[in-house]
Image (tube, rainbow, N blue to C red; front, side, top):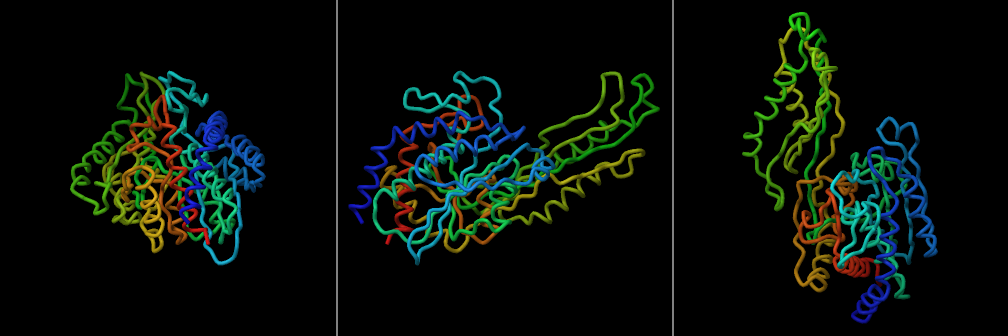
Length: 410
């Protein structure tokens, strides 16, 4: 086994320039979401994988469902690598959709520029980097030429930014995939074993528009919306008192991330739309929390003449919780992480939410691990000049490849 591990690590070192070039190609096809036209990226990745002799199954989500969802195109990719009988099926999942680059970049956001040991670009750290991590870990495993058992699957999906329901959620819901274990894209040295749940609501406050010089003829939707804002933010001290027992996760949070309303400076606003986000720690019940938040909003404007509310759920994602079997993934990743990184990656939770939860909802043990720095802020993830230290890519590829050998080697 030691000889196999050494050969695995040598192969990754010998092919690392090729891995960096692969990542550059993956970065250079834009996947801004919104608008969410991600099929061209899936096509490009499938072409790159064909160069390795791999067939990527294309699984397009029906166009009507994609448009209703607020995106333009989703084609999820599945690569199946079957081996000998008797082993598990292990899936590696990374998402290709990204938030738009925004302002302030000093390098092209879709350039894949390599400079001073870093690669720059949107999703260089989260999570196009793990397209490369997982592909080259799998190629290294197969290059050993030794008998393997079970199967490996690569799931490259395109709906993490909108919640994952049409990414891994679609593949699992349709019965296209059902692995025994899953490793999903990571973003730091840590191994994420749990994450928060998330509720997002769209709150529309209807009043009656009127001339600004005669406000008594109108019903001001913004005044009513202000009462809702005060109620939401007034809850924050209470939420801070709630503490999670999961390392890495603190308290629930709640905020309003977007407000749209009114028609002009001299017109009483007749309609205001707010989009709010409530993060739930793993110990909370999402159904109960949604009922509490809806009641909080409704009570804030109850009895106001002429005011009507519409509350629409945008997202209700479950928390990721450890399942039986996830400890096997953690133990393997920690053992090899200690050898490659020089420190034991910590198993912990994160306040973010990610696609890994969807595997958990189907009873599949899942953790997050992949290429990334010690902490997320070091990578500028989702900010200008997002970047990844190439040595961290190399190390993550080695850790994942050694873990694959643990699970799929004879």
